[in-house]
Length: 169
Image (tube, rainbow, N blue to C red; front, top):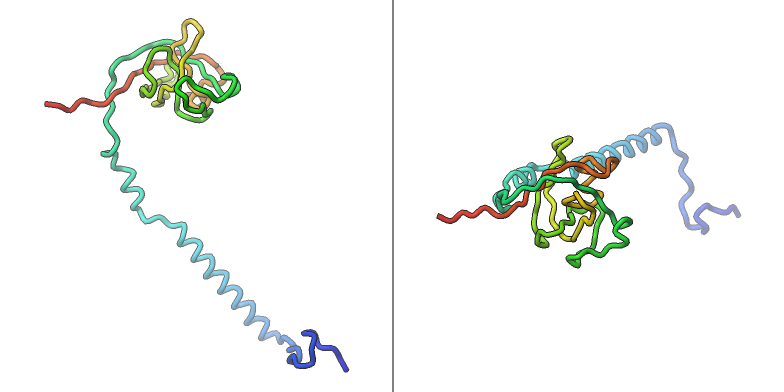
């Protein structure tokens, strides 16, 4: 008695694949792969709705410049701050758009402009400092990277204190 591949005597005999059957199998595999690719590709397509939503900024309040300071800016990070605590109680994040200022209220939005290259970013004050004479603001290292002065360490900046536009008549 010969042993069959499926393990019992009731299984059908093994069918030998002919070249025609092998071509048919290859063609079916190719079609299945093409259909899967089309489904995957169509799921990556955009509809344009998100683009239309991002262009309308009516929900964000308009900000006006209330005052301007000129001086030196430096950067700090979790490592140079000896941990993640800030004066506001928020956790310090190296990549956040936040900064330290000596006197501005916590939560104040300011636009910091690097005077050497013109790059600017709006950041939120959530910490106190800098405590080195001549410096007016300390940005997180992520903000310093975006403004292009990490390697220099200290750079001349313009700090514009921003507030909501008053629209009363």
